[in-house]
Length: 203
Length: 203
Image 1 (cartoon, each protein chain N blue to C red):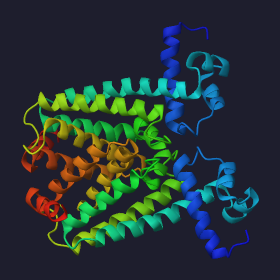
Image 2 (image 1 turned 45 degrees about the vertical axis):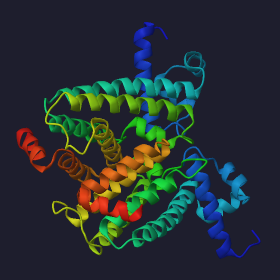
Image 3 (image 1 turned 90 degrees about the horizontal axis):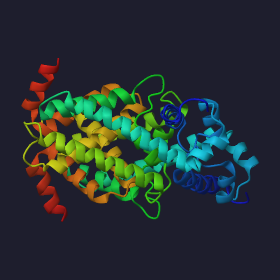
Image 4 (image 1 turned 135 degrees about the vertical axis):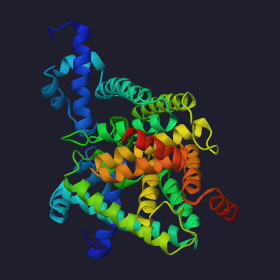
């Protein structure tokens, strides 16, 4: 615990996220966290209060990092289809990072959580809402927009649902199915021609 | 252990599925299973060999039950859009069953699993493939089929991805978002008119 506190907290949270993302909330013991962070249990409880408090801090840290990745993917293109494609590719790529194919920490956590009323599920629900709203704004700012039958909010929710399915494809290591889903999503949202234009521009 | 063995195994597996589905694989201890099944640990190990063996047997039992539910949903309509709608409604309904909003045991399990090479993940991958093939056949048998840009296999994979997203909506208790996703999926797969026809027929 000799490092500067701010640096320490950032590094520590990154290590804790790695631990809990690998092993899951229920599957990770405090002694594994102690082993991986080299911070003793008393200090961990001092910082986070409880294992659940540690999990909530880890989810907050991951959500902030994830938001940066999402933002960077969205900003990498100035068109609606380009933004959605970049976002979905980012999801599949981060989810299939070796050696673990860890998927998405938020998705894994909510599916592990015993009840939708638990604090972990509530926290994830808030992060998911933030992301959905961010996707909605990114689509509004970047023509061409989705087919007219979608409201912007519906299009954003649709994209997020496909991100969840991609996180599962990542976890199952079925990258080829994930690629097909990305193409289908672009065709569905924007129509075949708009989606093809983006793919040719990217290729 | 005085009941007839066949009856006993069926009931026991149903109780074990309930336990593991509620608490997750890592989050459920053998003593909780003992408490809920009133079968002692030695007998459980005798039957299943290990906690992982018990989980694999529970997944097999759940997958067989799930398959019956899927089959019944698919057979409830003679049209492609009607079959997909029934299947997606079944997914949302079973996933949001009270009090737990447990989602789908297969989806929860694969997301909890530490690696795509683990036996649990491999088993789930097999059940997912079986279900996808079943959906594909159900679509082939029931006109009108999906839009022409979908091969039957791609349409089935697309439907399955939406089932996964619905399982997550169920887990987050966001039923309204799930309903929107069902409508979007039907519009996307079959075109707006075919999908509307089914909804009017169902309503």
